[in-house]
Length: 184
Image (cartoon, rainbow, N blue to C red; front, side, top):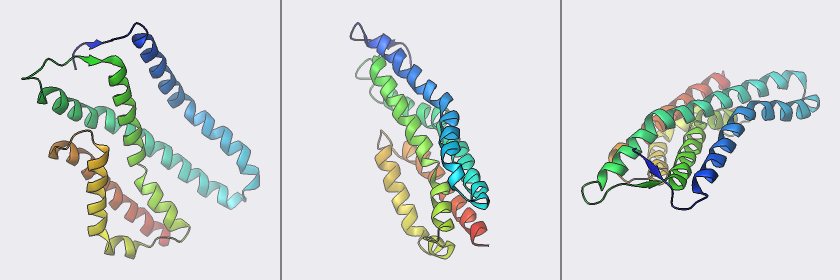
């Protein structure tokens, strides 16, 4: 992306603080999750504890996968399009504060999007969804996925739309597989 700039004296310092808080939260999140579980687990029946732990671990793995996907795939594609789009009419100079906000939003969006199979699985596990319904309404799911991808991507080009919508559709299909396993 080139060199980042700062426009206010405190902007570089505040950006370091924002990044430190983000990475500190990411590093502490498993510990925070464990502490929450340690508080709640005595009230949960033993046979349900294993079930909940599996969901929590899967959710954590998928969230981290979403962050990695955003960092290595979605963010570079979006930046490439956004920076090179107007480069022939203006010189890009990105303020560090704006970049950090863009970066954090992308990471959180990616982590959240990757929770689709968990949401489908949990809704199936508690009896609110069935695989037959998910398969029957696949066309509508594709439409909703494309609309959501269009809303969460920073650009309206087809490449960035595909960067999010294709994984979301694959995650939807993975959710159907998980739902099928739960129903059996």
